[in-house]
Image (cartoon, rainbow, N blue to C red; front, side):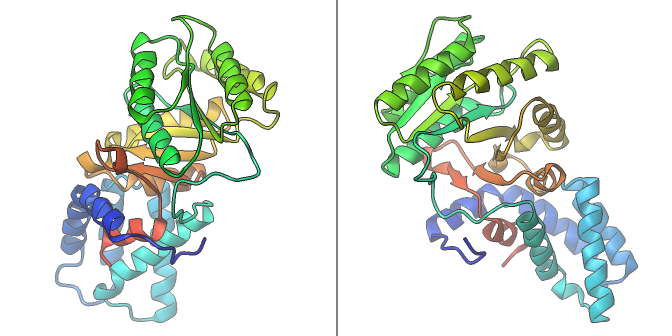
Length: 317
């Protein structure tokens, strides 16, 4: 899907509202960075570098963006400060494209993979189970038959929360007693989903195990068991990160990408923070596409990620 994908006014308003704190933070810093300057020079670029780093974009990604702007300035000879936000939008959108982030229009899954299996990973407290519930709602709304699997068997609260979401959304959930083998829950979920012609299966997993080795072993075991029912499962390993934690989200991404093959990101709680720049940095650093962003508590406040609209909302039209 191209960069000019359709984006409804309602979604745009939700996005603008959800990113308002980050936008206000970034814009006020950029305004100070270019104060009294008419052209982009070394001082402006130094100031911009500081703006991006302190907006949680990350050092490596910031240096990459600054280098690209320096190339533009060298090529075009004279770039005004008024053009700076437009250039920022273009370069960041380009960066996200290189990380294989597409502009999604709706909550869809490939038609040739049925059931489409999503394994959701992330530490406790990032909004993982809530994201699963909202995903189930959106997929069901799109006409899909959805199954949930409560494979976070280490926390009673996780299973209970997923059951509540399943009832709220009106989709089945497969669970076992506390302390059961998570891989067994995943196996039962996929077996039931396959037998009942499900389109989408979403498997919750434990957010925190004793150490990184345990985490890696557990996630690998779940994946291997799922393959016995659906040979190419999981089709998607979705890492949920709390955007409000800023640089801590980088460390979480590092832990989970080391433990399993994450191929999609969901960044939550962006509405309550000025650290929305972390979306850009994490996607670039780990070369993993952002697929969903959380912009509030409501069912509709989980959006598919659209890079053009995101950077427009962050840096102005």
